[in-house]
Amino acid sequence: MAIHRLILRDFVIVRALELDLSSGFTALTGETGAGKSILIDAIQMALGERANSGVVREGAAKADVAIEFDRTPQVDAWLEASGFELTADDAHLLVRRTVDTAGKSRAWINGSAATAAQLRELAEYLVDIHGQHAWAMLTRPDAVRDLLDAYAQIDKKIVTAAWDTWRAALAQLDLAKSGAATQAQERERLEWQINEVDKLKPIAGEWEEMNLEHGRLSNAQNLMDAAAQAITALDGGESDMAHHARSHLHTALQALQAQSHIEQSFQGICDELASSLAQVEDAVHSLQAYLRKTDLEPERLAQLDARILDWLSLARRFKCAPDALHSVLAKWRESLSQLEAMTDLGKLAKEERAAYAVFENAAQLVSKKRASAAPLLSSSITAAMQELGMKGGRFEVALARQEMPAAYGFESIEFLVAGHAGTTPKPVGRVASGGELSRIALAIAVTTSKLGNAPTLIFDEVDAGIGGAAAQTVGKLMQQLGADRQVLAVTHLPQVASQAHHHGVVSKRADDQANDGAPSSHVVMIDAADRVAEIARMLGGTNITDAARQHAKEMLKTL
Image 1 (cartoon, one colour):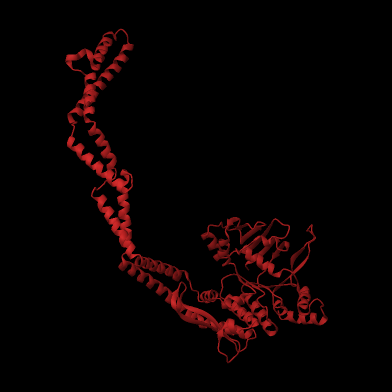
Image 2 (cartoon, rainbow, N blue to C red):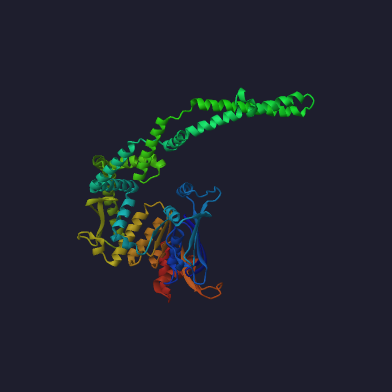
């Protein structure tokens, strides 16, 4: 079993509904307009289908749908991979979605916020829904292709990714070919600019270093004079003992040292003066060393002047800051390298051929799988058509090689049908009537549903246009499916409903709990006695005769 419980609040015409579901085949019946398909709409909304404010019951603030599913190993694997919490003591999965009157939607999986896209991903492991307009897909190329690929268990992600890679390589090659002249001009421009700046050979950080060195050399005489004056002030030499700092410090130190044996506090001051005297001597030695190694260097200054002028000239010419010249050169070189790679037609052509080879291999594998699966699918659907009242009819999945490949591969796929024996199969949309289309769609649904992994199958009035023995067969088929999986079917056919393991009746009546007295849809799971009455109603309408009741009893005996 998959769906354990369905809970609706203020959804369309449902005020409040809680429905417990069982395994096997459950039929949902009721009079027209009672809201049978609303339950299916609610399930689809809860599982990520598009929702809008129109689903909110009139007068309510929001619609709320929650579904409790039984967990499966596939569901648990998806939850773990998607980052949702798993609790070992809970055997159920809870999916919930709300929509307010402004159309804003919110969703949760096991109490954690989720997106509609995540709900749709999860839905693939939970339910497989076949709607009453399923026949419309028989004429849509993409739907036809998806159906065959699902039957053949083809993973199209590989071929699609290879297609995208090849198309990107082809576009790059075409761009290089079409823009060859323009790209050649751009290449020449970059080469000239790089050559002009490369003559200077700028180095990162060189501009700042040159300016510092130029500042020192251009002010060398002033710096040397300042050093000499400082030396004189600090240490004028033996001939000028009375006029320099070292002499005064020495005199002060001697005077205090002479009295420090009497005044102990002088000793600390003496230590400080001795330290200052040592620092002065160190400063003098450093300044003298500076004067010994410093020279005016007019030739070096001239070289710096010339290089700085060249640097400024190039910066003005190429409209950039002088200190950015090195990075601009690096950027041009990178652009030239990229352009050369883009315009290497031989290399691009080789890459395009290699990418196409990968796509071709992937597409050929897909083609082989389709070719193998097509006759098997054709045979299975043809067999199902015989059971649904199309004796002698034949279904065929036709593959045709296209002139140009596409993201999905090399072939187009079309469904052909022959409604009677002895006729040639033709495109299904041209030869099948509305009733035949419905039966063919049902045959496809039953055939492909046997292969699916979803624990729950939902059929929403797919039996429209079917009656008599074919309807009886539809019920039998759904009953057989219900032996292994949970099957829910909204139906108006007594032949189908009578084959169900469980039977729910949908009705619309005034809600005693609603202040406005507006009608609300309700679902009641009925027992054997009530099933007789419901099947009789479906057989004979509002006036239930004894004959209809007896007929209903006979139909239910086949269960």
